[in-house]
Length: 177
Image 1 (cartoon, rainbow, N blue to C red):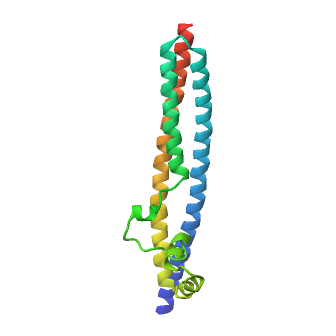
Image 2 (image 1 turned 90 degrees about the vertical axis):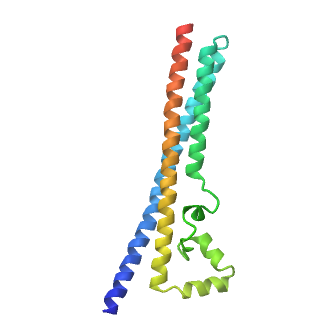
Image 3 (image 1 turned 45 degrees about the vertical axis):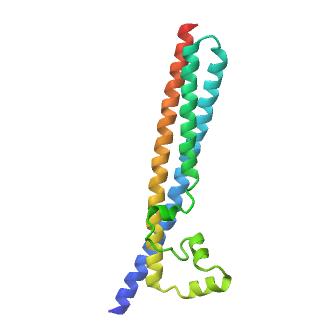
């Protein structure tokens, strides 16, 4: 019976490891989309700058172009929240979740400051403690992923509004010409 339980724990550990590796791929996907939003932000910013210089005497297109620039700024802030992380973000998720030894490098270093302490940490890891640490890390990564997706959604919405403002500024500039 204990062999079956031990095998079940080992299988659970492998499943958790798979999800942790998968979350890294999801992070890369989010970062790729954030980079695309950032690239589009630069194009909108360039367009708004052109409209600002071309519509020197017309106030309405200039104000709308400035709104587009502000929206681009908000989008860039959202992208920065996707790419960067909050300092000690794991504690902002749930302070009670245990430090995921060996599954989180910063957490492992905080648990074992020296090499000999780290070696002891590694050798002390049984399947139960590995399952607990992997579960904690996956929990934290899931919350971080959710935070990044929300920030990307905000950045994308600001970008869409900036594009609409840029189009409106262009139309107003053309209509007043």
